[in-house]
Amino acid sequence: MLLAIEQGNTNSMFAIHDGERWVAQWRTATEPNRTADEYGVWLAQLMTMAGLPHECLDACIIASVVPQSVFNLRNLSRRYLNVEPLVIGENVELGINVRTSKPSEVGADRLVNAVGAQILYSGPLIIIDSGTATTLDVVAADGGFEGGVIAPGIHLSVEALHAAAAKLPRVALKRPDRIVGNDTVSAMQSGVFWGYIGLIEGMIARIKAEYGQPMTVVATGGVASLFHDATDAIDHFDPDLTIRGLLELHNRNTGKG
Image 1 (cartoon, helix red, strand yellow):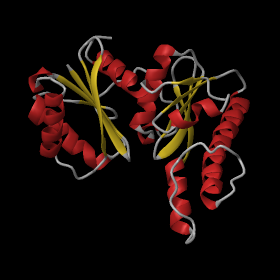
Image 2 (spheres, helix red, strand yellow; image 1 turned 30 degrees about the vertical axis):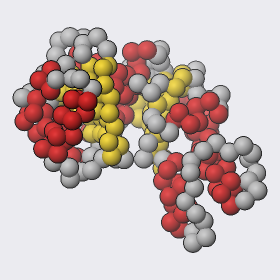
Image 3 (cartoon, helix red, strand yellow; image 1 turned 180 degrees about the vertical axis):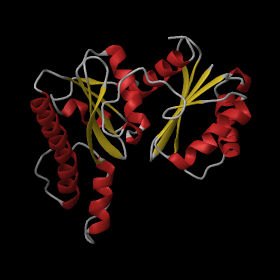
Image 4 (cartoon, one colour; image 1 turned 135 degrees about the vertical axis):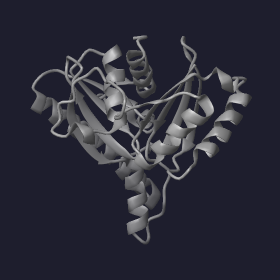
């Protein structure tokens, strides 16, 4: 079975694929200093609870945007799975062209999303991934990664309001009932939520105008589930985009694709 690890700045996802389907998925807060042994104990407990024998894992692929964590994740695979992992950006052939001026600077998650999207959707594409940062990436019709936009994530906006303004509280992220709030909390929620929708819609329109041809818009990431049905600018919400890309890259690099 394959252990796929996708690590963002805020959360990390561990998923297991048995060759036919995903049989388990778990999320944990990203902690750059967590050791391989700590990961091993945590993962073994979850697998036991799911009824999965630890020895069933015989492959591992890692996509991380936290460089200081890769060493420990690699050791997790070596020490507890007895397998050398595939690491996006190090020993993995993507099978797509990265048409940026500095390909080595493109985040692993963005590249994996591009691979995952081209499997199901015909390009050109705009891929929106909402996490700590919000990215809007362009994938050409031939699957090539052409660059994109990086903006602060919606949670950062909420925290920035609370941290920088003495009288503004920390608010829950939700879709407000009205645009115009009648108290401080509802006004903040409206500004953050609908302001974020405005950012998404505006950037999609500008990217399409610059690209000059029809494009399909695919959204992924935990926050995207809150806003994808609040705008017609998003064509598809795909929560499995990243793990689909990881599975495809594993298959391509092990001769199974």
